[in-house]
Amino acid sequence: MQSNSREQLFDQNLKAILFLLIAFVIISLILFRNLFFQSTFLLKSFGEISIDPEIAFKNNKPTFLEFYAEWCEVCKEMAPKVSVLKEEYEKDINFVFLNVDNQKWNKYIQKFEVNGIPQVNLFDKKGNLISTFIGKQKELTIKEAIDKLDTESKSQEKNFNGEFSAIKESRNNETTPRSHG
Image (cartoon, rainbow, N blue to C red; front, side):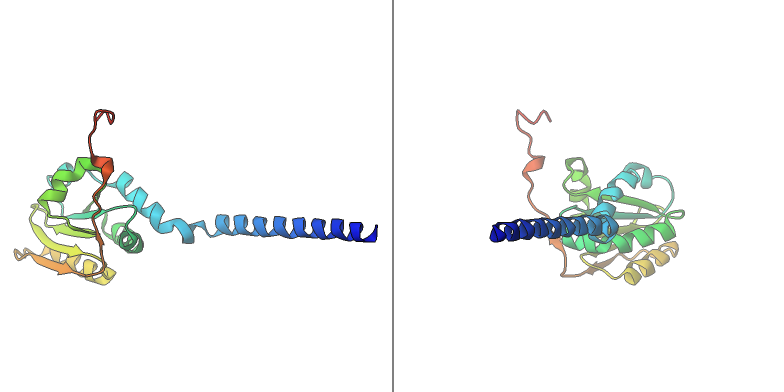
């Protein structure tokens, strides 16, 4: 009889500990969701806040064009830096974000020879390509290039970092009779 009550007490304690542990994990995820999911959230929001590239290249403002993907770890790592740049320069510069997994941007992906992401292209106000950055970059490096956009420099600069994500061949972009597309 006594062992039966011990088992019940043990079961109750185990349930209480398990409940507290689950509650702790849920509360931690809620409180620290920005730390866990900030980069992914930023990448998703980039596509929503982006200026259409056709408008950007015609409105006489310099343009920051980034090619990215939500699955790209380097893109996620760069997202907070890009967000800071956007906040600082968005009044003076167009910010265009194109997800390489969206087939409607294929003409731009081909035009600017995007083979690795993130890729950032900086254009002067006349639409001339001034700088290209491929892979992980320091915020200061991109900021310096943005500051040079006002000078009428005609030489094209290419900055390549080996830490980037190769573009995956996606079956999502294939058109089949059932895809309605």
